[in-house]
Structure formats: structure tokens, C-alpha cells
Length: 141
Image 1 (cartoon, rainbow, N blue to C red):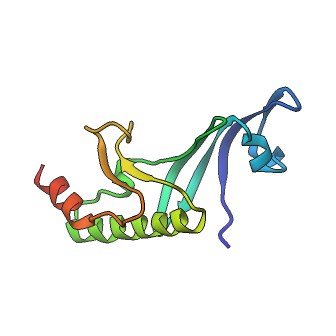
Image 2: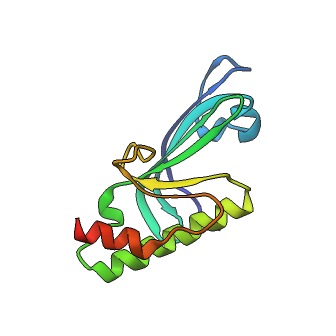
Image 3: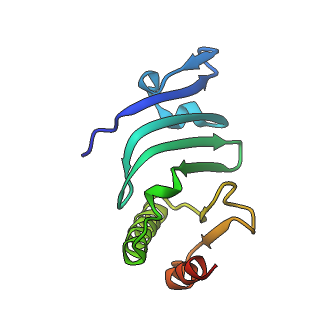
């Protein structure tokens, strides 16, 4: 397993009633249940491809939860279109596997805020997204 290099982090522990760092988290599920938030800034994260300068934001309420991966556009979109397609396909494949493994109801990829119609690139629930259509739209925009 790849060791993650954490640059910074922040969580609030309601039991301790104070802010804590990720290294102090003993059980992430307990910390975020029934509601909780936090973030981790990573030097690099392997998500099917290696992404640098990734911010992972955790946000949970009593009913729903979001885990958001933010990274610079330049990590995915490079000059060579074939390389972009390959990176994008690997990233989506990795996220699809996470979705199935952890029974995640929906996945969204887009520019911040990804859930807005204007900035959303892909949204999928049970069926895999149609990558070629998304990539064609991106390159022809």
C-alpha cells in the first residue's frame, strides 16, 4: 500500500470538543457519524492515476454524506488528448470500483461546484458513465 503524505488536515471531534489533526483520528466512521466534517490535504493520491495536491473534504449529516476530491485541473488535463482520455478513463474506473465496493449511491465528476449542471461533467448511479461523450464534449467546447 502506498503511504500517503499528508500536508495538513483538520477535523472537529465533538467528544473531545476540539479541533484535531488526521493523525489523531482513531475511528473515522465514529468521528463523522451521525454528522461531521473535515479535510485532508495530500501531497499525492493514487486514484487509478497519481494526482498531486489533492484536498479530500468529508461532509456528513444524519442522512447523507459527501466525500469530495479536489485537485488541480492540470493534473488531469494535459496537452495530449490521448493521455487525457487515458487518465480520465482510469480515474473513472477507479471511482466506479470504489462506488461498487462501498455501495455509494452516486458519483459526480466536474469543476467546482461539481453538482451544478453547468460545471458537472459526469453523474452516474448504477450504470457506468459514457466517457467518450463527455470527453468529446470537453474537447469540442
